View 1 (cartoon, rainbow, N blue to C red):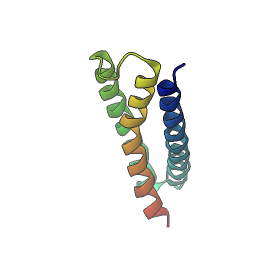
View 2 (cartoon, one colour):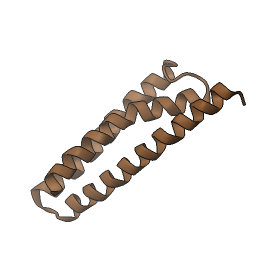
View 3 (spheres, rainbow, N blue to C red):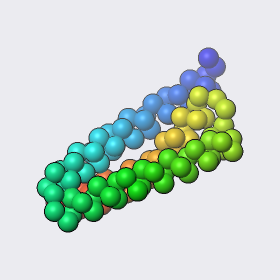
View 4 (cartoon, one colour):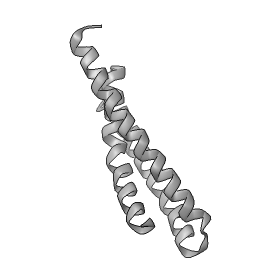
Length: 99
């Protein structure tokens, strides 16, 4: 593995830690909201499913069109770039309402 490739994986590793930390917070905050039941819990469950289906469908289209590249490194980077903004937006939205 060349130095350029190794550097790319270091960057991907750093981004992955942030990605999965944010995802874990979103899971926790969403479960809290859903477990609370009522109108808010029902809305959150519906929103979660709707967002996941839409995000996955878009990523599959991009993958089929070759927009994610062909190397494991480029595909991994594309996954983080595709799903990361939505995860961060949900983290921020749910954190505001939780606080």
